[in-house]
Image (cartoon, rainbow, N blue to C red; front, side, top):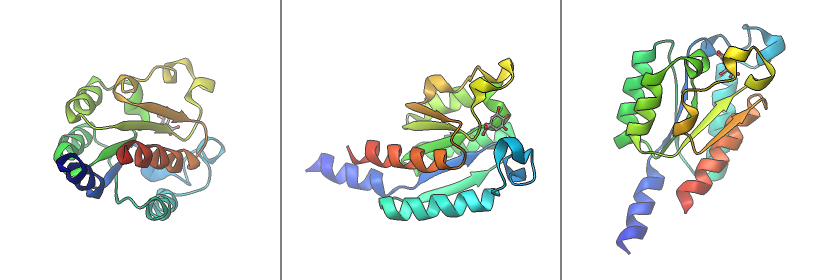
Length: 156
Ligand code: DQA
């Protein structure tokens, strides 16, 4: 019974959908790679999918590594899980990896583009060891798949 109550409480916390640097430029930025949808379009699609799945989300974007670390630290108490597209910090940031590990939450890593088809410096992700799973190359649909995966994990 206590476990059930705890689970219901966890499910009521929103999932944090956190976007890193330059993702505010979606729609304008290299549309041949990232598509023509804006981040507002992605947020709207995520909100619609979250509603369908019966979960709450909080959608955020920052161009600053420290601000992302602080959002992840706050997520430990505030959020039930994290969907993260860390942008270029994916390939550079031990600080984000440490923050994600410290959060002790289910994490799904998302990339709009297939990072393995691109420059070799994009083939390595510092944050993947903290993630349950990684979705790359499916455009904004990847965010919706990540929400589906988290909803399933949180319902367990
Ligand atoms: C990205 C891939 C990264 O390599 C890049 O730096 C980004 C976006 C993606 O969504 O495909 O900013 O995370």
